[in-house]
Length: 122
Image 1 (tube, one colour):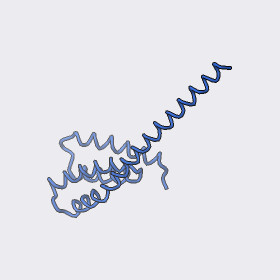
Image 2: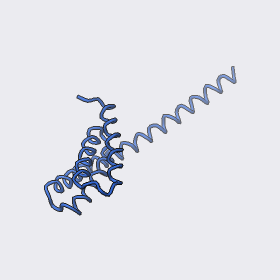
Image 3: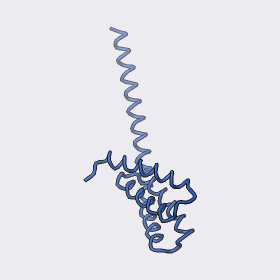
């Protein structure tokens, strides 16, 4: 089983390769589709659901233009529907984490001020 860092390295390399291929006009749509499917799979393994959802949106656009209602298009639409709830949960978790970090920073700053006052008094 691959560890997180190796999957992350693969995803970064594949994303760089995909952006280079996407800028080329001669790149076949089948190549873009394969790369996007790989990027979605890697981002799902990493737990980056919002990023995976963005790649699925790109896939949906490609399928809508070139292969509407194909098996791959239906699979992409299904994955988008399944990821919608996970993306919402990811946003909520990020918001909660930010709030908890703010509270911890406030507590730490209050503790620091109290320590400084005690040092000044003694």
